[in-house]
Length: 205
Ligand code: GRF
Image 1 (cartoon, helix red, strand yellow):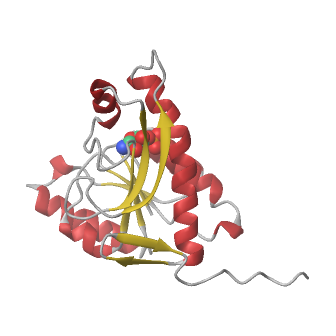
Image 2 (cartoon, protein in one colour):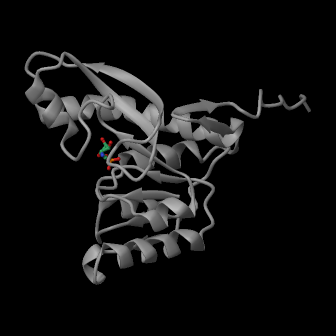
């Protein structure tokens, strides 16, 4: 299942990929922390169940985390994908299923909500995106995959983020598909995809 807060183009990439059975994963539900976002509309158009859990409807973060975990658990996901979900997930959600996040920078550089702005302000010539497992910290979990994107002269936050997102969507689709098809293991901070060994090739019929 996928958590979103905004436009949901990463979600759309996952929905498009999962239209093919060969992809090996499907989006069982989409959750958001706010109403009316395009990500929810994308899910509805694809016929995927949605829910909204707003922090402000709860007395505090702990209660919000418990409610969100319960909503996630209803769909019994094998994996939760945080794809542009702009809130820090709490222990309840992290205990409900493994969670991966996509981040628009090469972690551990530029964690947090303004990764693209921070990379530009620092003046790096190369940045990129990271898909990682989520732990209790902010963008600190073990890295699964990364891809670099060059900063161009004249880039602003919007142009650079758009180029990163083009790469990010492909990387996320690739990682989630491989996790579903091939399995994965974590040893310390090392995430290895493909722990189930090669996927058997179906005989021609
Ligand atoms: C992505 O760049 C994600 O890494 C960041 O916010 C963006 C979300 O884009 N946290 P979208 O909602 O998937 O279009």
